[in-house]
Image (cartoon, rainbow, N blue to C red; front, top):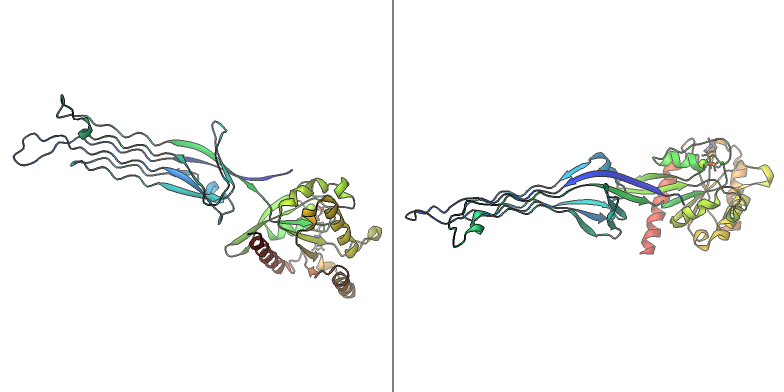
Length: 341
Ligand SMILES: Nc1nc2c(ncn2[C@@H]2O[C@H](COP(=O)(O)OP(=O)(O)OP(=O)(O)O)[C@@H](O)[C@H]2O)c(=O)[nH]1
Ligand SMILES: [Mg+2]
């Protein structure tokens, strides 16, 4: 199964521990006060937190270095230095963090709110007050802080399409995906242009987005291995919603919109119940090339009457109906997700 992986490589460095202080009490009338050097503060650590408000690693591709602040040195009167501030980096739920050098998985943040410290801050060094003993009342010794850990890590996020675009070959699935998302799939005026799925992110509201994927065209018998699409049906099994795209201009070999619709749904059913029970938005594409308004009306009525489906009309080429489709899909997706919770 094809998988889409979003990746970013970053360098992280925890803060160093501050050094301990060497100092001695100075009081009036006490000529040689004891040691009073405070300890250094601890360095800040860096942890990662899984946040479901995020869905890409884009920020980490843009900004690749992260450092937590170091602890401050201790000072006299046994004052401990200020600790460095811990840095919490937010990543999408489902992010895996790997050590670049060993290839090992450090953590797999698969649950909302889960967090892991990935580099620990250094410890503050002891001030000289720690080193006082019966034989040495005036130690001139303090520790440096230890260094904060540093690591090269790789963030990996397996992307899953929320919405799958299905339909016969050549109906305009890739054209649609290229128009509404950031994906740049190959488009061709012949069947089976798409050989592997294309995934893109769609922003449908100010702070809302979803992933959409098209798959190679399906034909009758896809579920039992005809054509290309069947091996990719698995790929869309984990989507929540399907956009079923129909070409109104395909009449060869007895094809027509309602027949196409039934064939594809039959293939979904044969493949799995899970796939055939997903909500579908059924869309007629290529509105720009459709001059026969009577044909359109008849088709709409037929769908309504025979399969109880409300058809939408778009043109992936001219852009007609695309905003409406994207908003409708986003809203329906939100409803589907909230029903699952
Ligand atoms: N007139 C018109 N042509 C379109 C429209 N959308 C797509 N096409 C054309 O239809 C042909 C097929 O488009 P694709 O996007 O490659 O179709 P597909 O469904 O991804 O095809 P496969 O990957 O082969 O299954 C191309 O020549 C497109 O330019 C549309 O809205 N209007
Ligand atoms: Mg295609």
